[in-house]
Amino acid sequence: MDLVLNGKVALVTGASVGLGKQIAIRLANEGCQLILLARREQLLNELAQEIEVSGRLRPFVIQCDITDRQAPKMVVQRILDQFGHLDILVNNAGGSRPFDGLGTLEQWEDAMYLNFHAAREMTHAFIESMKARGFGRVINLTGGDEPVAMNGGVPPNGATHIWAKALSRVVGKYGITVNSIAPGRIHSEQIDQKILPSAEIQEKWVAANCPAGYIGEPDDLAVLVTFLSSPLSRYITGQVIYVDGGARHASH
Image 1 (cartoon, helix red, strand yellow):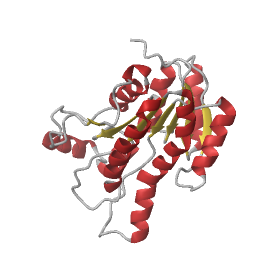
Image 2 (tube, one colour):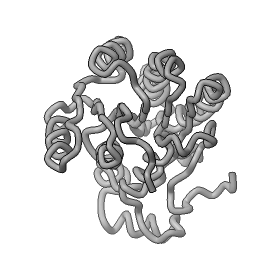
Image 3 (cartoon, rainbow, N blue to C red):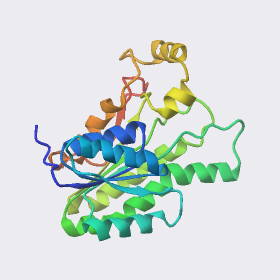
C-alpha cells in the first residue's frame, strides 16, 4: 500500500533509541524527510547515518531537551528555516516516574511537564503552519491509564488524551488529525532496563498479563504511527489506540 508519505516533513521526538528510532526508520522508508530530536546527539547522528546509508533522505538532527521551556520556539524556528513547514509531529519523548511515596510537588511538576506540557507546547507551536497548508498529523505516544502504583508518568497520559481529543475538534476542519497511541509493554530501554529488567521477570509478566503471549517489538507500534501519519488516515482523529497485546483490562 502506498501511504502517500513521500516528501512529507516529519519530526520525531525522543528519536535516539527504542520506539522513536523505529518510528523514524519506518517513516524514512516511506519517503519522509525526517527531523530527529533527542538529548543524545551522537545516537541521533548514528541513526541519521544509518537511514542515509539505506538509501533514504538523510534526517535533519536537532539535539534538544524538550523540557527546556525555550525548546518549542527554537525547534519551530529551525524547522521552518530549514524546510518551510512541518507535516507530521510524533510526540514520543517521555518516561515513567515511579515514586517511593506520594511524590513531592517538584516531582509531580517535572513528570507533568515531561509527559504532558512539553508535547502540548510543541504541538501548539506548529498548528498555525499546519493550518496554513491544510494538512497536519499529530501523534502522541502516551501510556496506560490504569495505575497500579504511584507513578507521576501515569496522570499525564489521561491529560494528553483529553487535550488531544479537544484539539482534534478544533483543528479537524483544517485537515489536521490528532491521535494518541498508548503502548503496552514493548521492548525498549525503559521496559528492558527498568520496568521488566530480566527475561524471567518478562516471562512472568507475560504469563500473567498479556493475551498475545509476548512483549511487543518497537515495529509493532511503528507501523501504526506510520499509517496515522498518512493522508489515507484522514477520518481517524481524536482517538486513543492501545497497542499492548490485549493487556489492558477495560473494554473501551
